[in-house]
Length: 290
Image 1 (tube, rainbow, N blue to C red):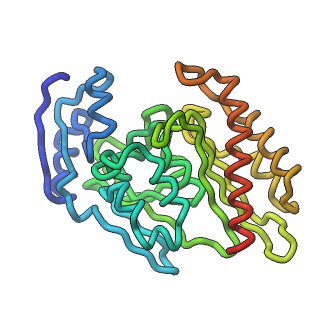
Image 2: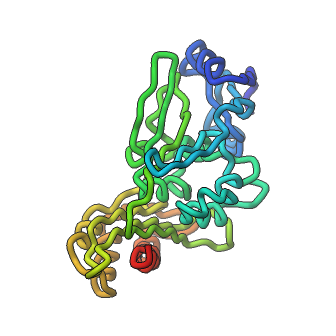
């Protein structure tokens, strides 16, 4: 790796001051599970590295029915996985985290670092999009709130200015009669998903009509991608097996998957059908019991 100057701020303000001072030349490291790999590959060579792991004010998690879930950007994957709050109100996040890398990685890696890395194969982003999450970003000049859905711009590129940092993830309280599920194709448990799907379905309890749906696929485009035409196929109709199959076919057609050493684009398209179907089926079953 190229030499760099290292800073270890202890407060948000100190970190933001460094980002402002070295705007465009500094990069944040929040755990290093992803960025160090990119640096070793020579794809990123910052002059200054700002290590915010010691900013303990960003390591928290709160929940209430009015404001929903608030997760500090430096909360570790393992904390989310083991949290009773998450298990009670957002079980899909616990399930997702249990399949994210190894325990060692989850013990150190942070949710904010994962999201800001912008990997289209990442697991948290599609689940948070399905949950309609928002992100709080901060710089010395102020704060802004952006939808998780629009945060990823391209592969390894996110909507984050050079002098900004992610502060908080905000997830609204769950809607009644809503089920959310996440599935991914892995060679081994903990691997990055060759293809993944996160689905949220809200139904009318009396007749099983879909009131709302969010279907998000991962590693099937350059960003985590909502397949809106597939969602439209479900909304306003009684959910059943043939309808879910139709939605999966539409999702596959909407996808724009890459070909790489792990899978061809054609194979990924077929797996989109399979894993959207699995996630949607589970989400529907959960919705009927909530």
